[in-house]
Amino acid sequence: MAEHLVKSYDEQLSILTNTIAKMGALAEKQIKDATEALLTNDQEFVDEIVGKDDRIDELEKNIEAQVVDLITMRQPMAIDLRETVSAMKISGDLERIGDLAKNIAKRSRYVSVKLPDNIKKTIGAASEKVQKNLKLVLDAFVNRDAKVAEMVWNSDEEIDNLIDISMNSVTEFMEGEKNYIKPAAHLLFMSKNLERMGDHATNIAETVYYLVTGDDIEGDRPKGQSDILSGQ
Image (cartoon, rainbow, N blue to C red; front, side):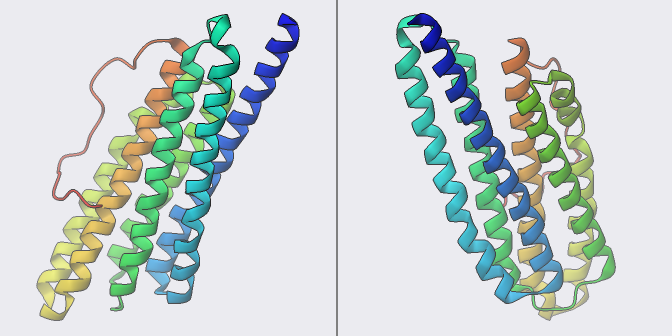
């Protein structure tokens, strides 16, 4: 009976890991699509992106239900709570990433002006770096790789620096023409949303590192220079 329970637990844990990976892939795609909608000013694409956020929310609820089942099944056997607590924390960060991507898509509706190349370049670069970090840290979770998680944690400063450049460029854009003030204000919040996504990827890196090692990552979290806005 005990062997059967252990096998059942391992199978459920594998399903939980796969569900988180699926949720992460959707969140990564949301970032890519939201950025594309902004840079191409594709309004039909915006509606499609906003609708997909519901799927991420559904997966988060699915993960919560799986965690409850795992804890219930293993309660008499001193379950290692690191696995289930980590899954809950990671799904929460992924849900927030999905929300922030949806927010970027929504705000892109108000940015109908032609964006300068330097703004498009830095926002695009920041988005790509966030997507890369998210993919790496999710791979680290699936493979239980603390080294890759720590690498992602250390690279968050690169995203912050790209966001600083982007926000400075947007500020100059805003100062150039009064009609640009409203779209530029949205761009500032959208840039900050990308930074927050990077922070959530870093949160996941910390969770994965703790899951694998049982320890916290040593040192202060690397950060860029400025903290202009707290976009939501």
